[in-house]
Image (cartoon, rainbow, N blue to C red; front, side, top):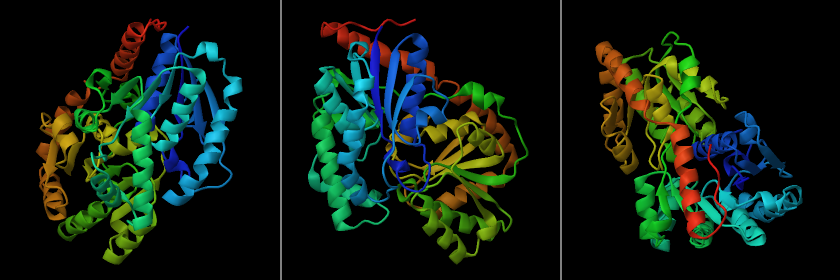
Length: 407
């Protein structure tokens, strides 16, 4: 039987909040399907296990970090301990059941352990890249990392740039690379990753869960779903909503998720005097977010860096109009969807105007709902899982390694 080990470190959850990023959700959705096809799946994960939160029943090996962490310096200092804890779990895994080792994301905390385990077990390494914030020069990479940080200090930015350079160096030895979208693949090609080892995957949706989630009353005029961090445009979201409230004093915004920008977001809302217009849910387990989305009119996602944006696809499947910034991945993935409105990156006035136009046009919201649902039907996790497994099968066969059997 074909088998894999996947490293899912999820460093975003090493702080005080439980967080599920789109990259980790994508990884678990693929692994769950591989397991159902007969693939023997093991994961190495930090607590809390995303696989368990998402109801997976393959073999999960969880490690607990001794303290809760936040910030790049504590996270990097904890890396050797995390590395050793992951390695300590290997004796519980029969190496004869393993044919490939997977880094579920391009975080160094996934890639470094996966790279080492692949060397120890002499198994091919596969790396999944989900973001576009990389560059061909260290200086440009540093600038991108500084822009994405909550507190863009020189030391923090230098450290995360260094960790990214190490990750890229290790990843170039990968047997196979999965890129979440064409913009991600373009960056990897520019960085020297060979095209013959590069596959573009995309994302899928849990259509059954979305369809089963009840349609409720539209309690919220706008909704955001994602990590509450600077790079997701949360500050821009709040400033744009402040403009909306000036025209519609009772307009309500729902923010689903948690993250390192949460306290600053609350302070900004208090400063603007719109506490009664914005509600935070904090961390929400997987299926619950669909009912929240369906209770809203417009999905607002002013993210500045994305590899794909699973949240946008989920919002479309729930029948929402979408307002977002015009960034390359959105233009590539959603340009044909009439219910997705893109505005100039960083223009909160234009963002607010687009929201107001939709709120003033109930007919457009109803029409867009059907357009969104129809467009979202093409996103299929099973299709992507089979595509990725077929890619692995093809390359293992070329390399003369046992290939996986697919039901």
